[in-house]
Length: 79
Picture 1 (cartoon, one colour):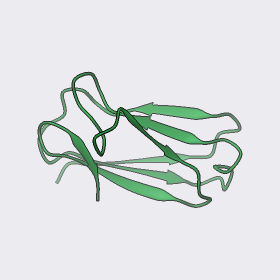
Picture 2: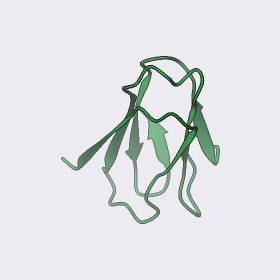
Picture 3: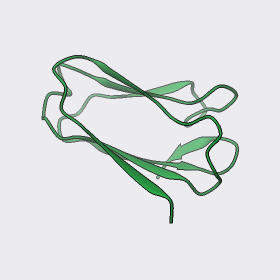
Picture 4: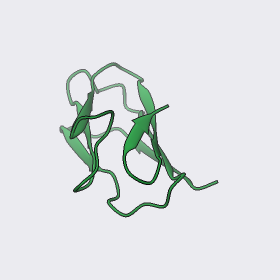
């Protein structure tokens, strides 16, 4: 299984770009580790030509939130 983990605890707003040419089945977990997300949001963007849940990006705003993103070979989905 191809899974990556990104734990974020920055003191600034963060943007994470999901890979454009990921292999089908790729999974990326993004987690608010610093409990600062309500002040410093995390935006997760799909690569060029792809979407994440039919949008260009998703904004994470809830403290301790984590999303698992799954790539089906065409687009990213939250699972």
